[in-house]
Image 1 (cartoon, rainbow, N blue to C red):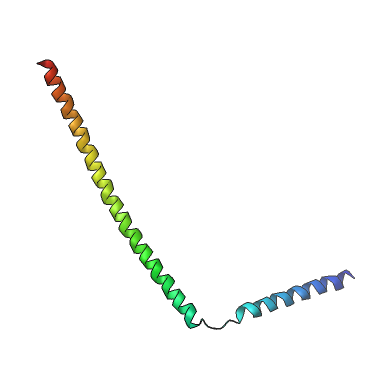
Image 2 (tube, one colour):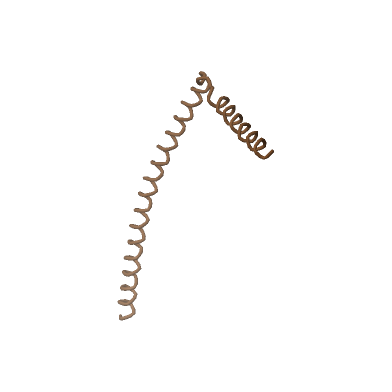
Length: 90
């Protein structure tokens, strides 16, 4: 009885796997609408990547400008302190 049950389970599993492979393996080639949608998706992805690259380069440039302005601010603060000390000494 156990052998028959085990044999039935094995055959049903093999049948179900074979059937699922047949269903998923037999697919027609994509139609024109699917190809057009794929091309549009590719174009949108490329445009998004280009925009991301442009934004990253702009961000890098702005960070450089920010660092330069911070350095300039620090120099101005030092100059202000020097001027304040000279005025206090007068």
